[in-house]
Length: 268
Image (cartoon, rainbow, N blue to C red; front, top):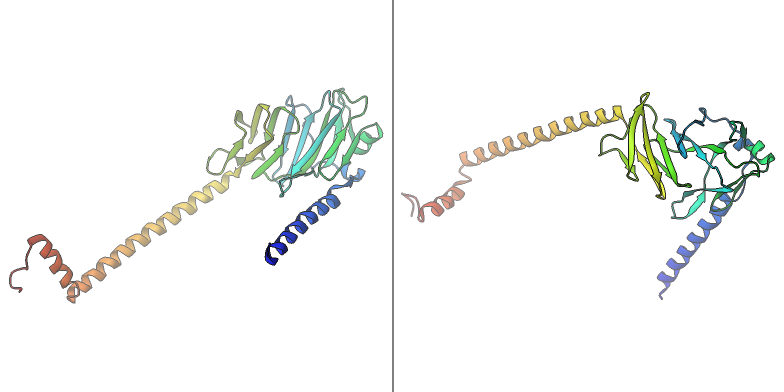
């Protein structure tokens, strides 16, 4: 191994090690009660009959509600840029008992629940009297490309902000398959009756952006067509000028020879 390869190997090892250390620094430690007790930007939708209900906002945030009945704990994480897991960054944590009572994060902890962050995951563990409840939390996620790991199997519903759609295949995309799309009160609802994939993906666009794109495409097409016609006209004019100056005589002579197999009359 030469010196250059050795230095490259050392650099790669140092980069991986530093990424791990940074991940530990960012990921480890507890989540403050003040973060968990924040108020969500809009009310959580507790009355959904889906196992997971996600309300995506136009402000690049989302609010998720999970049915955690008969669960002792739930692992929450996100995919990092290095292809590894990192703890999910959440806030405004709430727990709803089966009777409808809702408590915040500090009360959840005081009643035996845990919210613990490690370098790779965020764990939510439930107290003894938390058997048939739901949890809710808020996070950051763009409606243009929303990705959510599927921490639980079951039915999912993702609701896009008003004015966003996935209808046009060139800009809109939904994964996995097996979904239904409906529109209620101007908002598009994507529903999966059963999700077993590792993540759900919804790529949407604003309806007004579509028409802006169409207008730009029409203008660009008009400019391209106009430029082509102008180029062809200039080419014809240039050819005509060359012929008037006798610059294309030899070319015409060669063509005549090909057609007649001999020189034209009056030429040697």
